[in-house]
Length: 329
Image 1 (cartoon, rainbow, N blue to C red):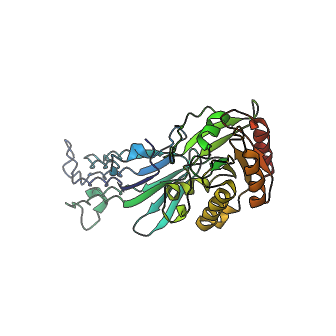
Image 2: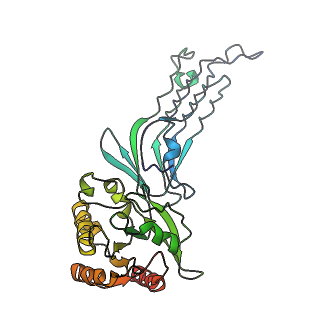
Image 3: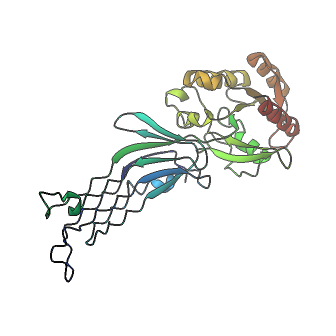
């Protein structure tokens, strides 16, 4: 199951308590204090791992806790440090502190990590408090508490190409044709309810990542439909493939569908709207679609690539244009 937002609490381990102990050996009547220090508490670390693509595995664990450090021992023995807790998240995860509202870290690439909560220091044993005037201290420090945070994790999927359009434009069919992705395909609005990723291959050494996003409707940036939940995933893409149903039965008509989606992109983020865009007219296998292409060209004022995702026509030229645009970006 896909999940791109999670709120959770993280607590690092507390430091171990220092030890109160005195040296006891035969023929050493005044051995003095030898209590060791407590161990350090374990950190809570978040790390980006490319083997994950959703935050779903975190929703059943509302609190992540590092291991406490062990208490110190006699003979100057320091307690064992607590184990760090390493939490794996998908690349593209942004971590925000809910108390301050600040972005703590953007784990954009595989291997990026952040020590979210530092473990508490271990308390000092009584040997640390021995002085010339107090040679038999009978007290030790408690361990220091570990850091604690309440954070929100927000996943913004990382893809080279974002495929957008109104519902039923054919985005899922297109990504299934261009890659090995197998999204759900049906003839009703909002068939796609989560983003789908696929790998597009030009040759043995040249590939890119495609993201098929749920359909956008008018008002998506303000919370209508599903678009407001997934528009953020387009922000990390390098280019946009804007897919429009050019058939005579398209609702809304091609020109209007293009204008609606462009307006939503601009309302959500001017930076997103400024990304390079490839306009694609789909369903060219339907009689009368050429009129839709003409209207679409007039509405967007740029080149339009006619394809039929269902029949597989025009896809080779589209693939070439995608990689050319990526190379120029």
